[in-house]
Length: 243
Image (cartoon, rainbow, N blue to C red):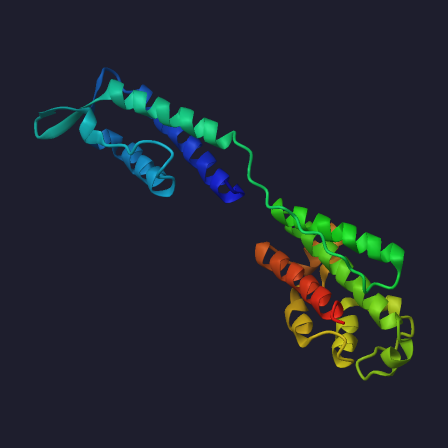
């Protein structure tokens, strides 16, 4: 069971708890059909999304009689079904979420061994952060890794790097921002243009570190931006791992 399924089961669980309170407040052992319509709709949706979790709710099984043109149902049996449904839901939501196995990658193309170890460690952490839906952490870690990789790459041939048309006037490559690093790396054909095309959501990643900057720049990020950030990092790994 993944995290989205677990979230939906929790929603159903709390919804049924509310339905149970309403049903329990009805006096006697009988109930009119219209009074259980919300419960019927919720249980139908639950069985649609999780068909193997519990037997479908069939109100005809709880039919008692018809009075004044209205169908009456056995309330005791319906209460029993709700209790059973809540029990099964509780067991289901207490099950551990299935966590995808993270992938280890070697960044052998990184010249600095200490930096290489940091990026390989961060790559594993990026995957765990994505699984946990920590989008901001993914963006910051990916942005930092990409910036470090490109800085290391461009410093390996500073003469060509600084002579490129896209190179900024700042002589210290370590002070270049991410967009400048990407622009020079693409111009020198060290990485594919896909890196540049996909990197727009990453360009302001440094602003995410400080809440004040995040507020002022009105940056928005969610699963889609996080996925793109990881894809840019993976493309860099692919491009730079070629013989």
